[in-house]
Structure formats: structure tokens, C-alpha cells
Image 1: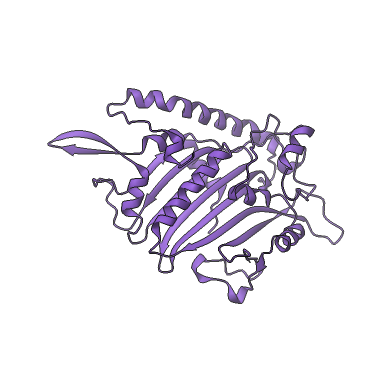
Image 2 (image 1 turned 60 degrees about the vertical axis):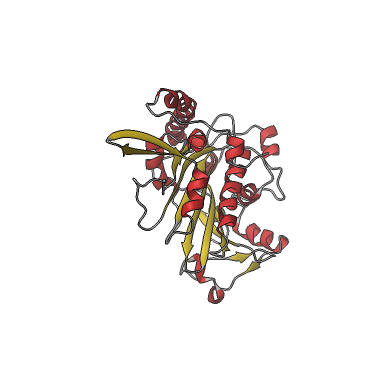
Length: 329
């Protein structure tokens, strides 16, 4: 099942993390944003178009990492995506030979590609841009809206999974996006157990603080803070272990989910170009943008206020250095 950005918005409002208001780029900024191996090749997504409207200064950051490589694949046409897969030595996986461990869709018209070294699988999601002019053959323009990457890590190599999680966090930080949730669970996890069994943090400051648990000690309430990586290390091998984290910027949504299955750990990365989403009839990005921008501003301010809130808390946490938490040098 695809992680729908519109569903996440409800949770987004609750935790005060940012949403998506896309921003118009100047010609100079567009040139900088296009410093990628290939250009965005659909003329219907970009500054001034229905799918990319939003005035303001862009905050997209360029970086050379695995997430930005996925992000670069969004916004290009369907045909040029196939061409790019050939250039990057990906091989198409026939529907009859699709891997069962990553639970692909049953729709035979979908496409899956294996990397040259067979270490991961890519699944693109092509959006029909129904607000774009119809092509000569009567079809809408199609562009890549979402890119999903699947990896499988053996069950006895859980440390590799933890390393992959924090590599993802480091890549997100390099892109300077805003972090949403960071959490884990497993079958029969006790939410009140100590040592803490579930990771529950939000925002970059929340990551620095760790996971909080309120417990009764000798009849008195006591606040406990646990290091997220230590909690993951204790629980990652538990039956039906599940982890999820997500992040946002005005143009894009990022997500990583990890599940322990009978095949091993399945890692599912997703990058979504949010403003390729078709809005309901009658709505436009011009109308949608002010609401999204206000949510984003509130989230930025909430992140700034978090440390002061922690300082005033009855059981304040120790705010650890973010670079050390996410393994940045």
C-alpha cells in the first residue's frame, strides 16, 4: 500500500510538522535545482504550471545522496523514466518474476526495476496529469509522482538495518528537510514497559531528546528518557517489528518503513512529489497554498519552541548533539 501524503496531513496538523506548499523558482534557482544527471522532462510540471504553483522562495536543497537520486526521478515523463532506467543499468522485472517479499501490487501494468548490482528494487508511480493538455494520441501527459525503493536485509543482520535507518536520517538532514515522526513497534510491545520497548519521537529536537516514558516508582510518577538507537537495538529482532519515519519540505514528502518478515527485514523508501497530486475539482494550488504555507510556518515555529518547552517540563530530557545521534561527522 502506498503511503498517501493526504492521509498524513491529519497527523501532520496534530504534531505540528510541516506540510507542502510549493514555491516558485527564479530562472537562476531553476538552473540550480536542475543540477542533476537529467532534467525534468515534462513541461507540465514546473514554475507557473498547475502542478507546481506556489509563490515564494524555494527551500529545496541539492545533495548527492540516495534520497536525492530518488527525488531526481520524480517529475520526468513516463517515457523518459524508462530511458533513464536503461542509462543507469536497471533491469525491468517481469510481472511473472516479481519478488514476493516486497508485496508488489497485483496490477500487471505496473513496473518494477532491479538495480545493476541487484541490491534494491525501484517502483515508479506514474500520475496522469489530467489538467495538462491532451496529447495528439488522445492521452494525458504522464509523469513520475512517487518513487519507491525496496531492499531486503537478512534477519540475522539487524545492525545493518539500524545503520540504514540512521543513514536515511543523515541524508534527510543533509537535504535540510523538516522531520516528522520517528517511531517503532512490535508484536506484544508494552507501551509502559521499562526498559522502553517502543520508539516515539517527533522532529529533530525530539530525536535529540529520545523517547519519553512516564512510570510509577514506589508509588510516585517518574519521567524516563530513552536513547532511540538503544531502544531499536533491543527490540529490532522482536516478532513483527515495524519502524517508520517521515519528513517534509514544501515540494516533497519522504518516508522509510521497515518490517521484519519471514523473508528478513524489508526496507521501503519513498519520495513523493506532492504538487503532482491532482487536486479535487474546483480547487487549485493557488487556493491551497496559503493554508499549506501557514501550516509550514507553524511547524517551523513549533520546532524552535520545543527546546524551551523541554526546559520547563517536570522531567526535562538531556538534548544530545544531533550530529552524533544521526551519525554525522
